[in-house]
Amino acid sequence: MTKEEMIAFMNANPVMQVATVEDDKPRVRAILLFKADEDGIVFHTANTKDLCKQLMKNPNVEICFNSPDTQLRVRGVAHIDDSPKLREDIFAHPTRKFLQAWKDKGIDNLLTVFRVTNCVGTTWTMQTNFEAKEYIEITKH
Image 1 (cartoon, rainbow, N blue to C red):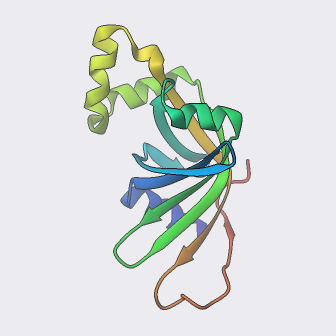
Image 2: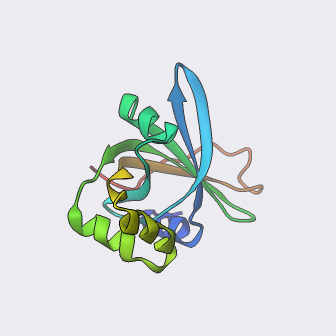
């Protein structure tokens, strides 16, 4: 897959598994991608969640995207993105209607937005199962 195909694959398969580390133990969970582009992978969580706390201690992350026949693994570094425009885009997005309750209750400050940068990705399929991994740079920063 090319870089462009990887970005398209992430956006087409937005349920992703995010792996972090806590006390030298791996942690993984499925979350919903907000968007992926050449500037990185954007997702959000509550600042009260373990995911947020783990990323604040160790921002290195690996994310796995899947379709029925392909797996894309991306590693990078997660940083808080506090862009007001991005936050508003998230709250206004049709797939994030559940967040409107946070705004209505005045607790929208719980939302923490992360952008994963320095991304490199590798794909896996049954056909390429025994081939050497090829890593493609997805984002430069």
